[in-house]
Length: 161
Ligand code: SF4
Ligand code: SF4
Image (cartoon, rainbow, N blue to C red; front, side, top):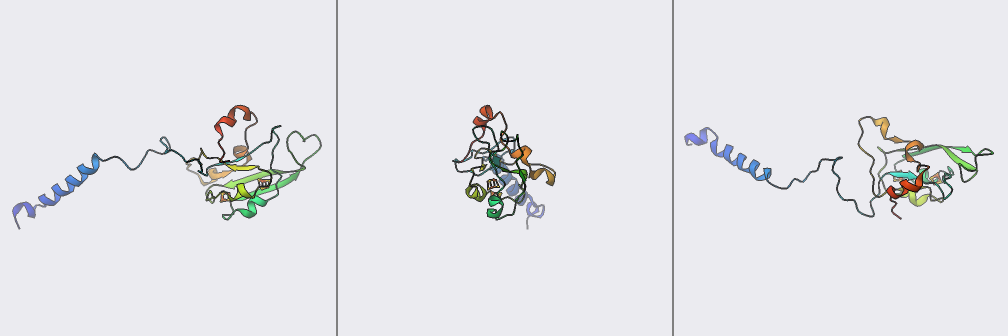
């Protein structure tokens, strides 16, 4: 063994050459969430609970989406519409609470397919953003429901269909 080999010099230079080669290669990773990769048209992202043309909630809390969900990610509490609330809820029954656990969700889209009222949709331009606390992945109506001024914001909500 030469003196250089005894001092691991060939191995050190070999390692350095590999490091330098990768240093100038195009990075495979991106700085998510600041940077995002282009999303396909068929992408299944964050859910949204839609309103009808008169801004009334479409969901009737029938529970079909929860039954269809293979991850058991959806829970809801149904309530009866009271007199005078016809402008808020489209049908006599509505979801008092509606929650999706985004940590359980596998974004399969079965809830969307199961819904007979076209109330729940997956957006194709938005993902559930990263959070530090587990609780923050439980999305309630406050974050799922289409905003009332959907006129403007609708442009930002992209559905798959
Ligand atoms: S996308 Fe799939 S896993 Fe997620 S809530 Fe809907 S049915 Fe459940
Ligand atoms: S989102 Fe659709 S399927 Fe789910 S409870 Fe509401 S109406 Fe029923």
